[in-house]
Structure formats: structure tokens, C-alpha cells
Length: 179
Image (cartoon, rainbow, N blue to C red; front, side, top):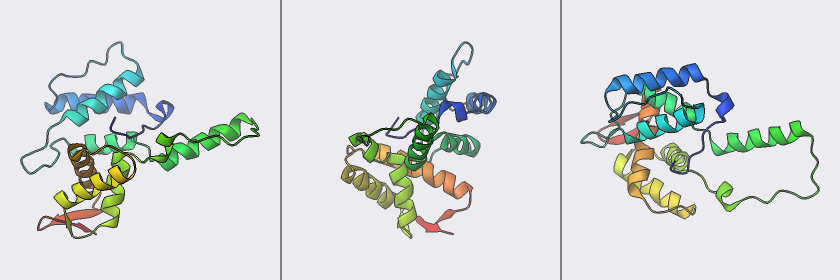
């Protein structure tokens, strides 16, 4: 899933998921509608995420799906810090005392492509979308990820779509401008 982590399944409300799957199916943007009958929540989340990621960009490289779907998709993604915070809370609840500190996997140290895209946008101003894509890709590679400009482009464009819908940034004369 492009290095991103989902929030915990228990935090996903089935009714909301089903509503967004219906919205995605009704949008006419997915090649094959998602059939929810007989599927687990995990399977539906996986199908929804794949469906959103399969929606094509327009000729200018902007994601063409509905804003509501983009917003819901972004709520399914958990920032790495939030995932770690929940893991600490679970450890405290279990009241297990460990004598040795847990070793972190190398993958836990890496940030996901979407998280790095958001950081890139946060740290940049008056930069073109193409420059942001290259900056995010370079940052992902520097963080130990693989070089893939297309995936970085998807992550930047998804983040831009969400941030512009919340009026956090705008695009003026082809440049990203924070409000």
C-alpha cells in the first residue's frame, strides 16, 4: 500500500466504509464495482483503497475522484507517530513489564511515501507540483525507500487535493501557496 499504514480496523466504522464504497461505486470511476456482500471489513478496506488508488489523474496530473472519497481515504491512513502512540498505549494496558527494550524494525524507522509527501508540502512554499513530486521522491529515497516518481506523484497529488479542499493551501500560477 505504498508504505502507508492504515488506522486500526477497530477504529473504522463499517457504516461509513460502506457509504464511501457506495459513493465510489456510484462515481463511475472504478472499472469494476466493489461487491461488499460476504466480505470482511479488512477485505472491504483493501478493495476501497485499491479502488481509490486506481482512479486516474486528469491531463494536468490531478486526481479526478470526488473530494468526499479523498477525505475519507485520508482518514483511513494513520500517521506513523499515531500508530506508535497506540502501540505504546496497548503495551501499557497489557501491564507487561519487559526487561529488554524492544528492537525496532528498520521498516518502523521509515516514513511512508504519503507522510513524506505531506512533510514536503509543509516545508515548501511557492513551489510547482512537479518540483514537489521530485522533492518528495528524493526525500523518500533518502529515507531508505525505492525511487518511484509515479508513486510520489500520486502521494503529492492526493495530499494537495485534501489540503486544498480544507483550504490549507491553494495553487496560484501553477505554484503551491500555503494559506
